Image (tube, rainbow, N blue to C red):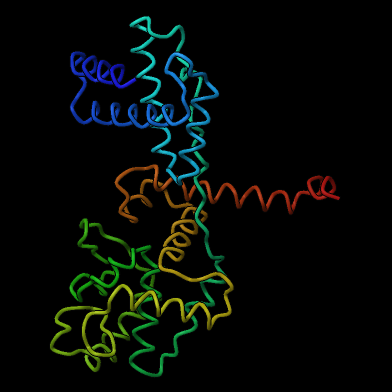
Length: 295
């Protein structure tokens, strides 16, 4: 069996396959050969069931769908070579494929839950003003937590209601309530909290230094608990809610892609799937014939 794998490697090299791809194919082929050797199975005796059993064994080891797909592609390529060399009669991996698991749609908050969350910070002290500004700004823009805490004062133009995310130089509009919350924080709280270590940071912690991503995660989780929302509140959940609510209210998906800073459209399309799912759920709950069929 080792000789067959070595011959397969030479064949790939002679075929002009890149070094990296050849390494992947041969590595996967050797692992498959080791699996067969442990079970006393010859390459000429491999069936489709053997290949499927091998994939099941990889699943049992916790291998990802991508790893399984590459493994079956490598085994298929190995047997293509063996079939061409008349070492086997058929390719047992020809009909085997890995079904990719459906991508889980992101969770989103309802508009009511978002409103409840944004009401939680008490605006009677600097910390409460800061927290209100951070929550409003996060929901206004759909920023990632790392982008939010990286903001400097110069990144937010309160006069024009625009935020500049320096990570990729994208501009995002702000709704009036977010502008008011940030303005109030800057005017009445930031200077009282800021230390020399804070520099130009827009949002600072109780020590006066730039707020950390971990610190903001704790902050938003605490307000979610205070609001009585049963799901764990995270910056990602609020980002997903921003994206979904924007689509529900008619924003163009390409504009949303720009606001979210997605390099490709596929990442943004997932939120369109959320909207479609919600529309279907609403339809099934509201349509009289749909309700009748459930009874």
